[in-house]
Length: 77
Image (tube, rainbow, N blue to C red; front, side, top):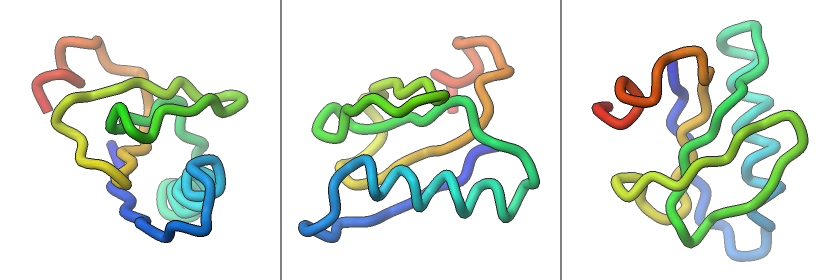
């Protein structure tokens, strides 16, 4: 299950935006995410999370979820 997160606040870093998305994911689903799909403009590193570029994710959008599924299923989303 993925959580879509949008934040275009220019004063926040990508890491801050990602931290807020992770916090909301944990509140909603009760587990930590292991994967975040981002636009190439928002690539960053984050401890304990795989950040992967997906062409279909728009800038300032973060798809936070679990990487328990095969890559083919994630790409088909």
